Length: 412
Image 1 (cartoon, helix red, strand yellow):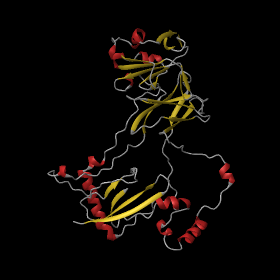
Image 2: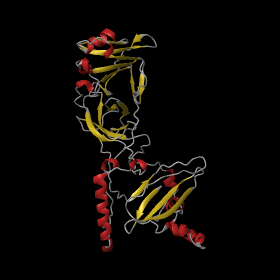
Image 3: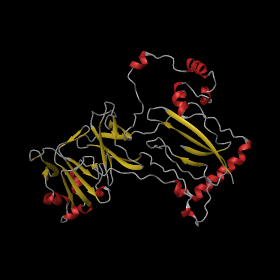
């Protein structure tokens, strides 16, 4: 549902959900006045002729049987971050290897991907909102010559045809000036109200679910080194030294024996493959330690347990990143902006008068009716006078589209 001001600059749109689903989507190119094709006694014959000349007519079996290719993958479950792996020595893709993409913070996320023969990795990080800092890396203990680069997620090609220059009549100069004044007034007096976003509910559960053991270090005596913390009271985890280097081992809860290989070590959701860097962390900055005491499979990655450290501020407790890791900002899903409409009731009496020059009174894209198919939607007019349009369109439970238009006038 949309309620907006009508003038020479904004008229009632010719197209609607109804005309798109029933006509325009089946035709090639733009259609002038699509609603007018269904008016008059000869509309059925006219529509048949239109579909015969401009509608769908035939298909080629070769196009249908050919495997489709997509330059940009669909993202139904959140952004897909694309990266590229090359061997620094030869400049060619290395053998397939696992990459890791982390979103550090108080509620970290982790995604893994196996590189394609051409070195491409597709990380499905899940849904996240706003701008976040991500960290991509590979296990440099396996191959230190792999170089990882992030592929630009935005298309760098522009349309082949130039856009036409805007054509404004000189008779619209007063309306353009008035609209500019209205917009400036709205930005001056209602900027904070017009830029409000719906609260986002974050999933606070870690990607591995509920850990087998969890330690809140504030409940224990603090030790000087992180190695002492592990040895003294973290059950099911041992640190063993081989050639002077530390190696974590997690006890397999199923068979009550320690695994032979290293677990997945995490600090605020970021994998750490060099245990020396983690051992040197200040235990005073660590808030909790989670232990997963069984084999864990995350995409192509299979690890002998997980030991996840979380700091107080989500800043990785000053643990140094691997030199081959790539840290970069990434724009996630856009926050859902709340459409602002003031409420003028008895409670607002006596408040200082604030100009209200809204051109669009209401925009509600997700109205859901009750069991009887009805709902009451309230809207307050602004200080502008003139003609306003109310456009309501949607799809019913039976899949049939509907469209309705109503106009009203506001006088001084």
